[in-house]
Length: 208
Image 1 (cartoon, helix red, strand yellow):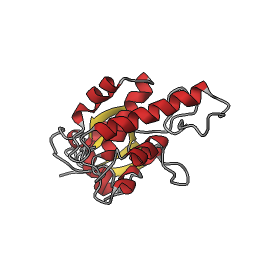
Image 2 (tube, rainbow, N blue to C red):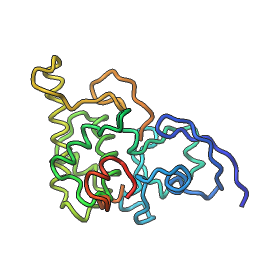
Image 3 (cartoon, rainbow, N blue to C red):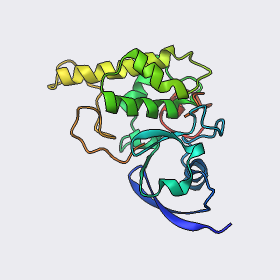
Image 4 (cartoon, one colour):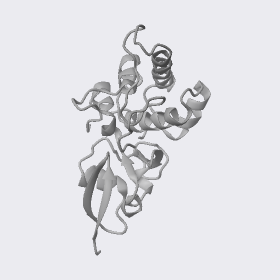
């Protein structure tokens, strides 16, 4: 099948890739660009494992053609890492509270939650639960995932209530344009089964 060159903006970087009309964004990101955090799960858009953000909204990369992503911002979990590969505060909350166990589903869950928080800033537990309906997890039972997200949101609230930082280190971050900050959002964007390398690995966005 004839291939054509397209330019994708992935995590703020323009990448030229050769794709066929039928190539899935999942395969291009994972196999072509080496982004191991974009994982194959069900292949039917049901499990959430391959979730990325397209113009800030969660989509299933297994149901999106690579050519459809041209001209849009594609974000994967790697975009949340700091310049020194430090974890995003939301990732830290998952590690601290056990929201990531096997880690396979974690990239998709974190991106979906991050997108919700950018829209709603302080969503309720029920809103979080509803937003994650498309992210399946076989390990945590979801309670620790919800606890982790709520802890991150609580930290954001504490930081904004105490801008001088007297309450201790905040959890806010300028990566991907955190809620309530004026930091420029970098181009940003899972099946819910967390990564096989353990909770620390997947929360950092590494390939299993």
